[in-house]
Amino acid sequence: MPDRVRKTSMRRAAAGGNSPGSERFFSMTNIYVGNLAWGCTSDDLLQLFQNYGTVARAQVIMDRDTGRSRGFGFVEMPNAEEAKGAIEALNNQPFQGRPLTVNEAKPREPRAPRAGGYGGGGGGGGGYRGARY
Image (cartoon, rainbow, N blue to C red; front, side):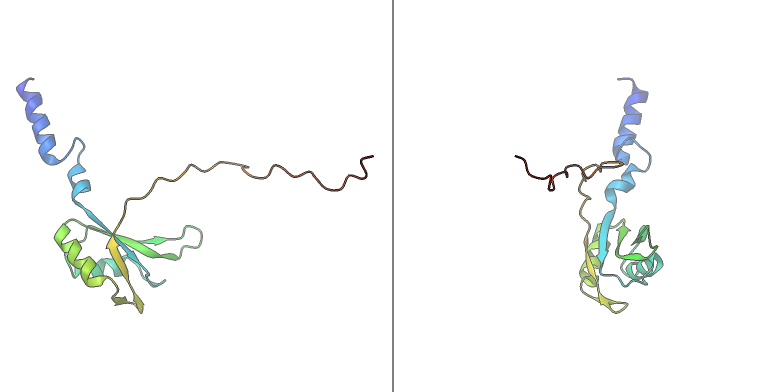
């Protein structure tokens, strides 16, 4: 293997992958925060978790139809120890009048693809058709 190729491969491996920014992906701790008050914003979540360390991102999940909070969100923290401390400190603690549910987020499970268009119905018929004989 030529030296130029070997050095590039070694740099990529040291950085944590082949794509730029991939080292960030693997080192983040994703935290689930549930039982949020309906009025809670992403900024509220950010401020709450910043008391325990560096926060890369905080997001309250919104309902796409109503634009209202769905009552849960996610926080990403780059330092695993800080994230663990935040989880331990905030789980079951009151925030905006409600006890929070805080734990490490589980990976999203794959969902079955949805059928498009008209996917239901069928069958039917039946009913009274008069005497047969």
